[in-house]
Image 1 (tube, each protein chain N blue to C red):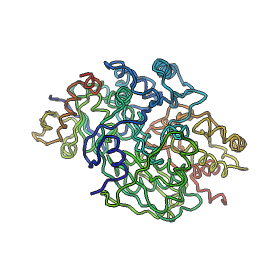
Image 2 (tube, rainbow over the protein chains, first blue to last red):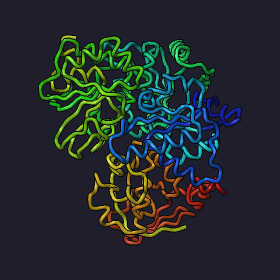
Image 3 (cartoon, each protein chain N blue to C red):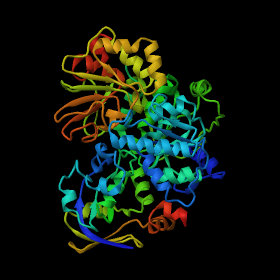
Image 4 (cartoon, rainbow over the protein chains, first blue to last red):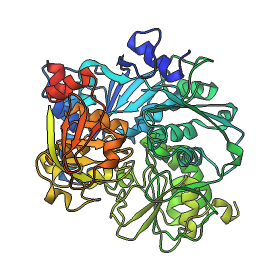
Length: 421
Length: 160
């Protein structure tokens, strides 16, 4: 029996010719990631260790992104803890206000993750980098502490689900709609402990930004990682962004999968996840009027340049509905600058939206867009759990940037096609 | 290693946002986080929970964020073990890494009711429901996970 793409990467990093699902291994890490929420806990754990030196100061990334620019004194102290640690240990990839971005948009953009890497991050959306053909997954702060000290971590080798994507998606169907459709299909624990491997001739129609979005939300189906084969688009992206060498792994023809799903992308429609689980998906147009109070366009899921361009295309020459607040958050400084140069920020501001510096802020109910009781938000983020964006009686509807922008204009959950687009 | 306590029972997909809401994530100390444990799903939990008590969830317990603050809040609230049909994988890792015992046991997760008195033997994975006089066989930890838990977490384990 052959190995899946994920199993091949893990075998190579554990020093084995072959691994099997269920096997416990210790893998060498190419990158260890933490943010301003999880790193302070890791740093405190590391201080309890006998060996307090980091394994490689170039293979650790500390990204201040959740509560920055700092929202209060405690979050400022957390960032200071990370900053002091980064200085003391001469961490090369420390990103603070002015050069930061939301971690999972920032690391690929800076070329810090490439195909074939094994990456652990103390953030659940670390699974994003599977778009580049890397194995990456989320862990906790103690995992991060141990990984920073030893450069290794234990994994249980996952089995896999295979998603064969065929056909070409229509104009307003993006990576977000595809992954929401899949989560609706298999449920929030449908890929529990498993890899989600995306293959098929349909993937050639998906941009890298679409693929980042799809892998980003593998965790919302319970997945350990999401991963795409490395094709010309992935190679072109890495050539543009990264200096370090990459390694291409391919699944064996006789690799074993727990289940296989074939999805014809041409049949998908813009999709929204209703409260309070990402699996509560409905196609836009299949439900009645849902009035909204706020729209958030951004996050590690959908704050990349393609997302910002799509939202701007819809909002150009239009106005945000009178009773709606629309918050646009480019995910990194580079995306912000690009959007500014392309005139996209002007479009948003003229439409009556606000544009924020990069931050995770509202996605997890931190700040910059907290909801009151009874309020509804259409958001391009990744979770719509009870109280996720504020009051326990508020509601989050997950959608693509296109649906979010159209909804901002109409004041209710809408497809761009309703605006004649 | 054993645990005994009264059960707080919850449903499917108990996520890390209800276990410890992000508005409290500017704190890092377990005792501070514990004050808000389960607040968005059960406001009474923190007032009722006693040292040694047990949480029982159903499918996909601990789904969502990687915040280790979630198992830490549960541990520091005095909970001795979480039993569930299945756990979200990052929560599972985090619980083990901080030395917080958890057991997967679909039968126990279904049969045990809120308020039941339950005893757990971690070495065998046996769960005994004192109130109903029933026993359930949970999954015992593989030896290396037992070592991590009995060392008090991954860091102490690495320190030897």
